[in-house]
Image (cartoon, rainbow, N blue to C red; front, side):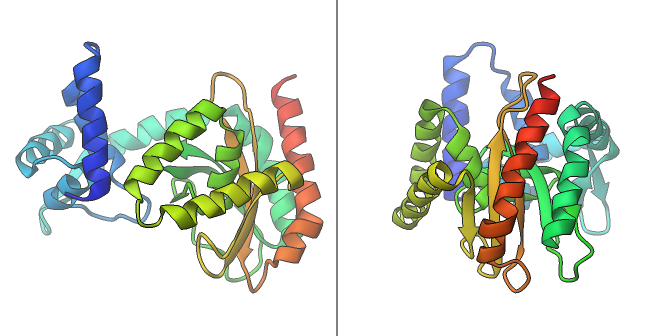
Length: 269
């Protein structure tokens, strides 16, 4: 069992013990579905067991049940699973109700075309950021990311902007969990996060210049979408060979800040 899986299971066990309304079987089934990530074609029971931190026998029962309900599809040739169409209906229903996507998309595309970059809208899901909208320019060599993609919470500009906007108590608790999961990397991660919070206060955006991926630059700004939704973030970035730090901070940054303000104004009318 991996360290992250162990930590996740420990947290779940604590929740089960402390909350009589917690339905263990439901939580485990949802964990199985959540372990499928963008880019995963097929996963076997052993893969799922490692990611979820559950016994393989438990996972086998869960995948059999989820397959019968249409949430997973069993591929006989490989004895592995892919997400089923029932999960598509859940995701589509959720995305269709995100008014912020309709408001943000034309402004995001405008910025992507100006910067010849990629502009994305995302929010936090546990220890990563997940894309809920994505716009690309026509420039070649775009990043291979789309709706549903997950990126780092700690090293990406999007994740850092989310942390900068999070309530102090929530941020402190989350960072403590991240530290437990990344003891050896924590000093470097903390240094980057401290700088990111300082950047956000002074520049109005979080930055990541070669820290999420070595040859990728990005800046991001968070906002409150309202409607009971958690903070969301708009990120602009691309390959460093095409999207320089100077371009992002000098020309893109004021436009990103303006776009986020326009989105908030439109949402709160």
